[in-house]
Image 1 (tube, one colour):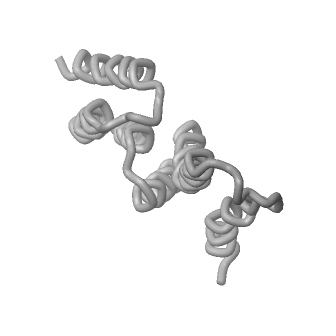
Image 2 (cartoon, rainbow, N blue to C red):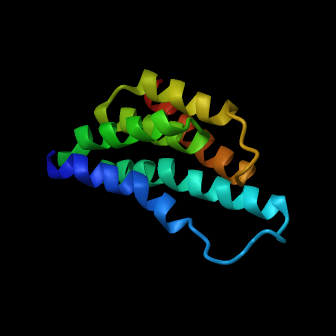
Amino acid sequence: MNYRSLYLLLISVLPLLCSFDFQDDTLKDNSKRERKSKLIHHGKWYFFANNAKECLDDKNKIQEALEWIDHSLDIEINHLNLEIKGDYYVKIGDLQEAIIHYQKAILFDKEEYDEEKDKKRVQKKLTRIRNRLK
């Protein structure tokens, strides 16, 4: 097993290991437990999406960025990782594919996130690309 595979495995398991609560929570309400569960799940896909975003800043790591974001999308599809996939396509010059991913990000159900802020950010990116295509 190479170091990269071992690293990916460790990162996938780490949020689960950190999620153990040693206090007796039998008296706590279920909504708090559900929120905690969502945060743990959020950590898995977000870790890979964030690494993809960081790789996009280094032109020598563009292929690595694609691997990270695809792994994030395998875990959960949401507006943030769809946006990063659009950013990837902008970096490689495939503006049509970037538009498709930005549009998917805008239309995605964003009940857990700051919808207006995220939506405006992606709309600005979409507008810039469309202006470049004119």
